[in-house]
Amino acid sequence: MDIKGVGVDILRISRIKGVYLNHGERFLYRICTDQEINYVMRSRETLFDRLSALFCAKEAVFKTLHTRNSIIFKEIEIVHLPYPVAKLHGKMLHIALQREIKNVLVSISHDSDICIAFAIAI
Image (cartoon, rainbow, N blue to C red; front, side, top):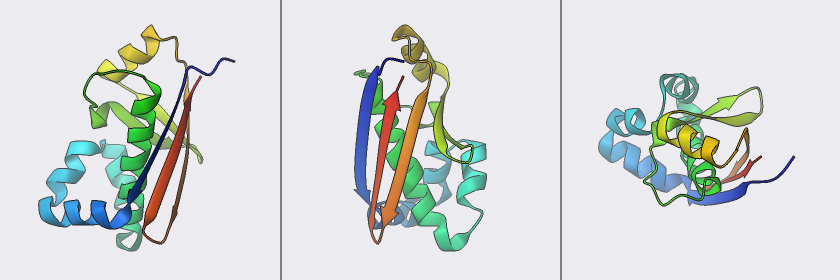
């Protein structure tokens, strides 16, 4: 099993909360798949933690692809099995297949106002 790429991202949860409060569900529908929206909306108490975790994980996954293309957030789906993995679609899947990436593992953590995600493409 070869490692094809690694990516990490860190952000303040309050930043994502601010974007969400300014743009509402338009922001949510821009970056999340339907399955991810269901996951985020399960609890209003953890909405911003979960949304931040998804955003952060998608950024980390994008970095594993080593591409200069623009990130298409909805083409990177974070699925919980119960641990998170990335499911790629469209252009992001095409890029992964070109680089012989078969799987992208993700680890996410958050504490207080900080969220971090790490991704490994194999």
